[in-house]
View (cartoon, rainbow, N blue to C red):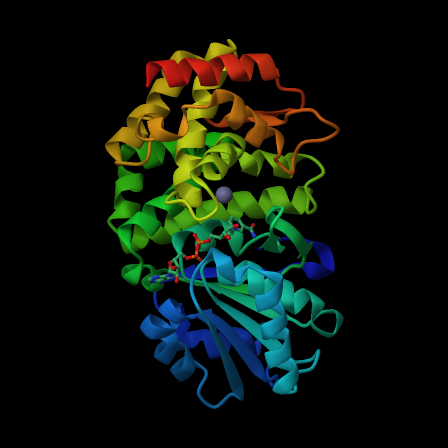
Length: 363
Ligand code: NAD
Ligand code: ZN
C-alpha cells in the first residue's frame, strides 16, 4: 500500500499476475477503454499474454522501439497523437507495460494527456518492479540531460508479475539487483543480512519466493519513504544512495555508453561506502562487507570501472550536475554503517576529488 491520501494505491506482487490483469483493473476502472504502451522486445515476448489477459476489453496497443532514446519529446508527441487518433478520453485507462523506460514515458504521457488520465504500471524488469514503477516519478530526457522534463504523477495501481522476469537477460537482472541491494544498505540492515545470507543469490537465480519477498520488501521501503516525502524535499533523497557517484560514471561512459543504470549504481554504492570510510564516517568492516557481497554475487565493482576513472576532475564535475544539488553545493547520500544513511548536503568537494584521484591511482 502506497499511502498518499486520495492518491493512494496498491502494489500487487507475485507469479502469474499478468493472467489476472483484467481482475486487477476491475477495481480501478471496470468499463474504460485501455491503451497499452509497450516496447518491441516486451511485445514480442509477452504481447500475446497481455492481449489474452485483456480479451473482452476494448484495447489499443502502442508499440515503441526499446531503449533509453525513446524517452524523448518527439516520441512523447507520437504517443499522444496516437491516443488522440484513437479517441481516448480522461475516463479511459493507460497501461505502461515494460521496463523503466516505458514506465517513465507512458506515465508522463498519462500525466499530461487531456490534463491527466489514469494509468497502471505493469513493470517487466527487476529494476522497474522494485523501483521505477513505484513513487510517481515520470520523465523524458533532452539534450541537457536525463529525466529533466517530467511530472510527479502516481499510478492507480502497480501489478508486478515476477514470471515476466524469466525472459529478462541476466545483465538486466543484475542491474535491477543493485536497486534491491540499495534498500538494504540505505535503511534495512536485516534485509541486507538476508541478501548476504543467500536471498541475493536466490533472486539472481529467479527463485519465485525470493523474488516475491525481495520485491515486497523493496517496494514497502520505497512506499514508506515516498509517503513521507512524495516530491523529494527531504528523506526521499536517501533513495539516491550510490546514484551521485553512479551518475558521474554514466555521464563519463557517455549517453549511449555500454553501462546500465543499475551497473553504475552498484559501483556507486561501493564508492559511497569507500568514501565514507575515508571520511571517518563509516567502519571499514561495513564497506568490506558490501564489497564482498558484490563480489560474491558477481556484481559490477569499482575495479571493473577503471576505464571510467582516469579523469577525477571530470567525474567531480559530472557529480556537480546532479539534480539533487542545491545552490552550488554537492549533495551525497553517505552511510554511517550498513542500513543507516544520511543526506550530506554540503559534501567536501576537495575530499571527493582526493578520493576519486586515489581510486584512479589504485586502478
Ligand atoms: P528498460 O525499460 O530500457 O528495459 C531494459 C531492456 O530490457 C529493454 O531493452 C527492454 O526492452 C527489455 N525488457 C524489458 N522487460 C523485459 C522482459 N521481461 N524480458 C526481456 N526483456 C525485457 O530499462 P529499465 O532498466 O527497466 O529502466 C531504466 C529506466 O528507468 C531509465 O530510463 C531510468 O531513468 C528509469 N528509472 C526511473 C525511476 C523512477 O522513479 N521513475 C527510477 C529508476 C529508473
Ligand atoms: Zn536508480
